[in-house]
Image (tube, rainbow over all chains, first blue to last red; front, side, top):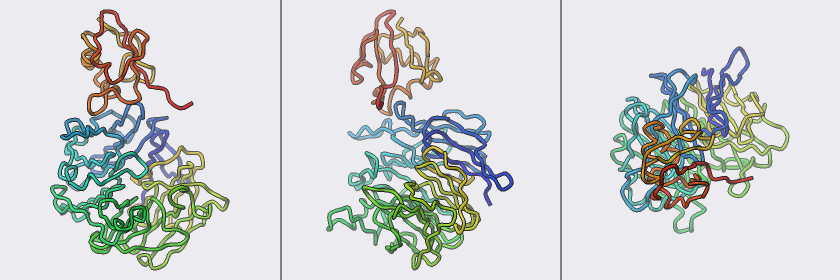
Amino acid sequence: MSERILLATRKGLLDFRKSGDQWSNTRTSFAGQPVSAVLRDPVKGLLYAALNLGHFGVKLHRSNDEGASWEEITCPTYAGVAGEEKPNLQLIWIMERDQQGNLWAGTIPGGLFKSADDGNSWQLNENLWNQPSRKEWFGGGYDAAGIHSICIDPRADGKMALAISCGGVWLSDDYGATWRVSTKGMIADYMPPDQADNPTTQDPHRLVQCHSDPDHFWVQHHNGIFYSSDRCSNWQRIHAQPSSFGFAVAVHPENPQQAWFVPGIKDEKRFPADGRLVVTHTQDAGGTFVSQVNGLPEQESFDLIYRHALEIDNSGKKLAMASTTGNLWISENGGEQWQCVSNYLPPVYAVRFV
Amino acid sequence: MPFIVCTQHLREVGPSHKELFSGRTVREVLHNAAERYPRLSGYVLDDQGSVRKHVAIFINGELQDRRTVLDRAVEESEEIYILQALSGG
């Protein structure tokens, strides 16, 4: 099981490691600076951290010594993008690595970028950017649409899946040379009724793929939970108690019927349903849910778990979850028992087992 | 030659004390400063080469319009001061 977790937070990148039974932060990088995404290349041992400096824009850093030192490297850029929009990079929301060693970055305002040289240069995926339906995408919580989920198929056969808020779920069979939207069954209640099933205005908050059974996907959507067992061709709407709203989802790496969610109250409130932070867990593809509460706050809570702040490790047993209120919990047994590791962190954007 | 001096927030990427750079306009001076400070322009300018929305440029103590400042002519010994626009309390 993984004994190291990287936390991208409002005030820096935190490197939590387990020693004995104790988890603790062993290094803070970029202290005081917002870190929006982090990635470790396990083959080359390189770390990547994306910063959002506000006044001074988005920056990307790389480390070849596990975070002891960093160098600022080239950021994805929208310079030279054709058309009248003149877009600017607003956020690197997610970074992933494919089996060939290419890096992929999902950004706001909706561009997908690829680097074949460890982040020294980036190319915009124009096939996706030039989709005519991109004009229908819009921001979900931000001013512009953004790519926050990139699933590289573990079969290493060119298949990829993306999720965009708000722009639907997109599939490629050829490492991004062509794209098609695939949201059949998804419903957007925030749209006018006759447009509720419009594929390119769906708001999937997070898309995850089962590693061992990669035709199975889960989406935590703005309007509920959706499950697909046929590589996103059809989506089944799932209802969970106390709420089907949330941002984060984790799927078991070997059993696609097992998934975890953190229910909240949607739209204007965005804090735990009934003021009680719980994790909901299904073991039968959404047929039933159990609320996991052991080790989570018993008192009223306002913790919100962002879309990248609930993760499961490769063993399928260890979960990590961190909140906007600066709390970090870890479970070693699939969520049956949670351990609070810290109550005093900055707001957490992303957690990542490495 | 005109000077550039940056806010302390930019001390790792630009001059935090007055330094001379050649150039007839602010754009040229920033361009020439990149030889010594290659990261500076990415902090001051956005993807499209415009002054970032929350960056303020003063010349001789006078706040400049960010939409036109890059083309402003600068004279010998004029001081270009770069800082973040303040927001919040």
